[in-house]
Amino acid sequence: MPAPEGRSADQARTAIQTALGQIGFTLPGSITIRHARCGKPRCACAADPPALHGPYIQRTRTVHGKTVTRTLTPARYQAYAPWFASARRLRALAAELEALSLAEMARAEGWAKITPGTQAPPRTRPVRGPNPNYPKPPETPGDQPA
Ligand SMILES: [Zn+2]
Image (tube, rainbow, N blue to C red):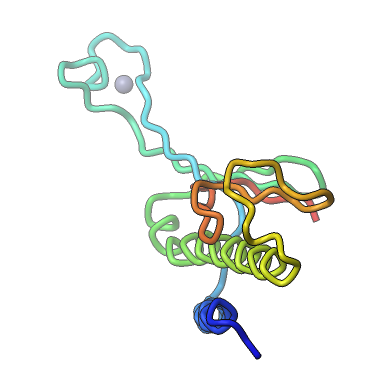
């Protein structure tokens, strides 16, 4: 006999799976956008208000433990922006699914009455974030080594 919590967890899982099915190309890595001053005293970047140089858009990721940085033009960055957004969405959905799974395991094992902030049961991974079901994913984390 499935509990009401179990049914809603199934609905949440189905929603995550549906969203995962809509994910397109994903580009891992983090994006850094910088504006800079060149240091020349008569340049527009030294004016008030300053007109800074840039944007300098860099994509950084980790390949076999080494950081790889590529500079993107604003046009390239715009072209691939949906792919970067997909990567963030994928990480967020994966985090949601993991949190949901942890909550389901805790419920199934009778750990569900544990109050957030108290110590987790032995051999469980602590749930991150203020809401254990939907932790906010990091903004733009780098690739994890495979
Ligand atoms: Zn300048």
